[in-house]
Image: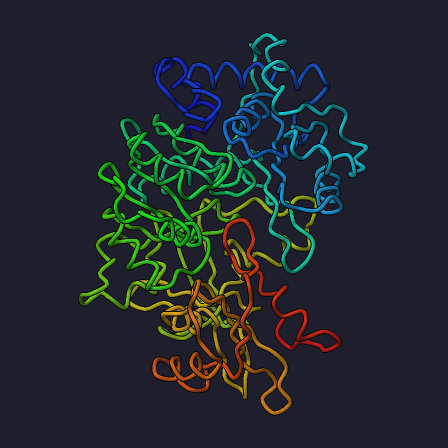
Amino acid sequence: MVLVPETIQRHGREKGGETAYWTPGGVWTFAQLEERARRVARGFASLGIGPGDRVACLTKHTAECVALVLGANKIGAVCMPVNWRLAPPEIEYIVNNGRAKFMLCDRLFVSALEKVTAESVKTTVITEEFSQWFEKHEPIEKEHKAKPEETALQLYSSGTTGLPKGVELTHGNLAAGMMQAVPAAIGYHGAPDVMLNALPTYHIAGVGVALLTACKGGASVLYPDFDPAQVIKSIAEHRITHSFLVPAMIQFMLQVPGADKADYSSLKGISYGASPISEKVLVDAMRTFKCRFMQVYGLTETTGAITALSPEDHDPAGPKQSLLRSAGKPIDGVELRVVDPASGADCKEGQVGEVWIRTAQNMKGYWANPNATTQAFVERWFRSGDAGFLKDGYLFLHDRIKDMIVSGGENIYPAEVENALMQHPAVADGAVIGVPDEQWGEAVKACVVLKKDAKATQKDIIDFMRGRIAHFKCPKSVDFVEAIPRNPTGKILKRILREPYWKGKERRVN
């Protein structure tokens, strides 16, 4: 099996002068990427960092993060990007959990890092001074020969329902996903294709897609922040052919004045995932961007995408319209089961249960957490925690099992209700949660952000939805809010929405 470090090393020799990454700070050629990684490796070795050690980064800069990943791999160490949106105590937990010996930190986050106590970190380098640091070191000559089963990257789960867990992804995981199955699924084949990547470095899609394009010998345009107007402008300027976007990003781009008149002639395909998308946003995006759309579903624990809904199945006005609510079919090398979480038996077609996954992309386990690792696997099947069903080979997702609403004995999945909610012409954004109800146990509540200058009452919203979905699934109440809390990848933070209603009460669905 050819691994990521070997592949990028070969591109450094054979495609040295070609662009690997364009960033606002300058171009990184394949030769520069490889040389900088080798210098980083020497720098780590000079600090006594070696096989199995962790190095951390708190950065928005994806090219620098990739250099850290590759540099660490060259000495058998492991890079663990840290979510820069976390509060200092949360950052402290992750850094100490991983026992990181090195930290790369953007100047923007120094004040937060100063509040962190991490005795394991011996050296901190400011990202804006990173080049001066690694240029002091000669490129390493003798590199660690990685094995497929060794950990290559450690990413932390979002921690929305508890403490974050370190997801150990191996060299074999990355090779199976980012070098083979995922690029084939999204149609990215390397040069002359150009990927636009404005996703965070600590997310599998951010760092993973950056590694994917480099492995395929193609270019990425990398932005440290997502600016919808800038992204639209960049598509024409850099002749972008591909991008991976979360639905919230697509929604923001559609709201940019003049978005429907911009130049998207270079676009071949947009992949989307990480959170549910409403049919209205998807249809509007297909009409605006005029390119092929692919939905992908995956998790950090599966090294990213494990299913894909092909462009041919995006047919909003035709006989395949119902497939727009599907996450697609398993990509190469992936097997799926839907299991009744209570009995452990396989569900019948169309019956909702927990999605289980078996693939070479499945993580090695959770770092220093054998109990969580054991609970996550049944033999080689990874228990996703996501609720869904299979129909004609397609996977249909509802929600996380924990987000399911149980009302009067009926299981209600918020994503289905949210899809109906988002069709209301006055709704800009929305989320559905379960709140306490003395009679039914839980009742459905909609939290709604109205469009600018739009007006709607609770009755308007409920009546509208009753014409589209079963009455027992419709909200009993509507709260109008200024914003829906989301994590950096666009996933709605249902725990935050539920907290005020469940304070002092025990929720039966955790």
